[in-house]
Length: 252
Ligand SMILES: NC(=O)c1ccc[n+]([C@@H]2O[C@H](COP(=O)([O-])OP(=O)(O)OC[C@H]3O[C@@H](n4cnc5c(N)ncnc54)[C@H](O)[C@@H]3O)[C@@H](O)[C@H]2O)c1
Ligand SMILES: O=C(O)C1=N[C@H](C(=O)O)CCC1
Image 1 (tube, rainbow, N blue to C red):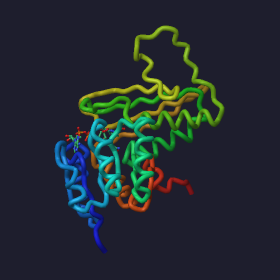
Image 2 (image 1 turned 120 degrees about the vertical axis):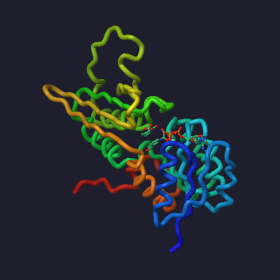
Image 3 (image 1 turned 30 degrees about the vertical axis):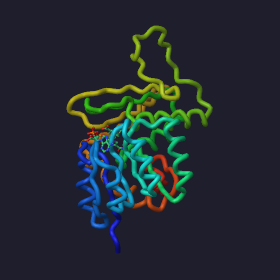
Image 4 (image 1 turned 60 degrees about the vertical axis):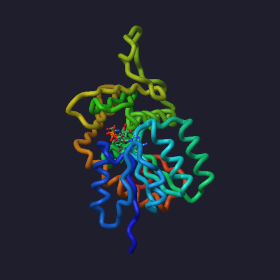
């Protein structure tokens, strides 16, 4: 059987360099290109890449995806910084290239995907909820893409259940003391040397609290999700947002 031809963009970065090793080690894949900042995107077409794994920076991702979609190269995207405007632009490009698939995953680690799912399930049952994300201090965006997505899913679940805003009597606060509000859910971002990527979802009701915590301790935690996504995205035209759509998360 022919191998899946995979390229990595951001190949010298923290997660990109790990992805290069993971693709090289995968028996059903061939690493056909490994691009860093300033490298010629034409390499992707010339190398015959079927899937580009995009792990660069929020200022580079749109140009890279524009190229991939124009050339019918499927993409698996871990880069953060997604806004409604960016998603609308990407969907427009995909409409002109209907056989191309793009998977955007706020987080590729299975534990983080499950954290989001568990938080979504728990959200309607608790009065209070806050999200704390903790990352290495070289991270350029805050809050993390994972925390933003987690808060959006929680807010949707609370709205569907008809829950009012969480109780909060704060009358005076220093700017930032109550975190950033993502759809009404407070999100707090910690940056600390020694950390990689961690998240806590804190839920509270009368007389009880529930804490859902996930820790990525090594960039290897993201690799099974990236490889799975690369295998699946070639069969999933259009935009898929969230790795959970490529996993069967239904409980037996
Ligand atoms: N979804 C996930 O599971 C997940 C996990 C970890 C990191 N991330 C995200 O991935 C991105 C990269 O994270 P990182 O920690 O590896 O950052 P990093 O700064 O270590 O790596 C980014 C790399 O991309 C390169 N780059 C920038 N523009 C480029 C371009 N146009 N073409 C090719 N390469 C380019 C940079 O030179 C750098 O080497 C961030 O947005 C981060 O939040 C996502
Ligand atoms: O290290 C990073 O940067 C990470 N970024 C993603 C995010 O913003 O959620 C995923 C976790 C690691």
